[in-house]
Image (cartoon, rainbow, N blue to C red; front, side, top):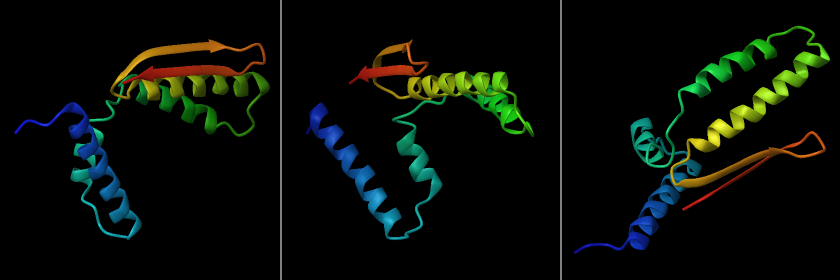
Length: 110
């Protein structure tokens, strides 16, 4: 018997909910089980590691200057974008800077 896409998605969501409930109960959930589920939702982008290493340099500065703080902020915005782009199912990414120096990001998909 073949399941519909909606039924498969419902079953997957139920598995994730059950894993979360077990975690809340303090049960030991094997990392491999979680990794198998997560790999269906998220694909890490290799560039993320490089950006996180750059961020660590900023975080290790004893007294960062304003320019360094600003650069770190821009780097965090890029990291957020890269993280969201690793989500499976996204079909559209819009990123832009608003006039108030705030970075806006809209991700949509199925």
